Length: 356
Image (tube, rainbow, N blue to C red; front, side, top):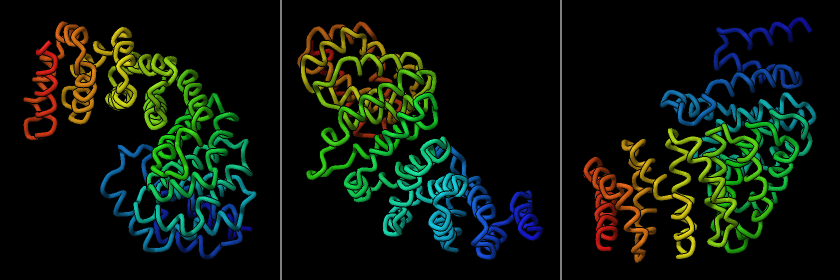
């Protein structure tokens, strides 16, 4: 016991190295405390948010993968299925390793999806297991082939269960929405996204948006999930929730961009365009273009939505002119003149607007 205690202290120390973790996981395979502390050390090697991941983190991830560290994490989770700490920190570590495209493939071959869903099922009361388990599913589902397998495994059942059991936990809801976002993207004629995920997913995503309106990260993931789940006849209540998110997080480019992508997907019906213009979508688009004038992808999405709103709609064109849409489109074309697709799209949209 003294030896194990000293090993645990070694992992907790600031001087603990990659080699130390590798040695200790190998030396104490039957000590759950060593295994979960090692998994926690590995999880802490990368930032929580993908936008904060630097090149050095990616390089270290490659080194750890070459050293077969992910395999040690998987073995620990298999050895201690009833230990919630091992499962939580094991999922956290695998989540980060699964940011690597090659690991996404090898993890599915190594049965990580089954191990993760087993953790979600066995430790339903543990918020950290549910959070990190959803993270693993999310990253695995980024790969289209993985997504098909995950959908056929009915992993959404455990995502929904996590959302129901922890409705007030922002992180659980955010990561669950992220998992739904990628699962709903699957292009598979055998597994239709709207039918399989459909109403049950939408209901939970909207609930998460309502309960956690203050979280920009959650709103971004939730809107992206709705985008992939969208159908032209979708309940107008969903539109109002997305518009509310745009208003509440006007300064957050990711929320604005996701919302623009979502609205583009539901506006191919003429009636939807008219309704959304009456709900002041046009003014929100122009405002997003002004606030985030240096965000190239946002400008592109804004242009795409304005194009659809303007096409063959004289009243919409008149309204967009008065809102200053032409000026913002011209500014985007000038600011990103090297992007020929964006420039042409802006110019064509300006023609649509001015022709009426």
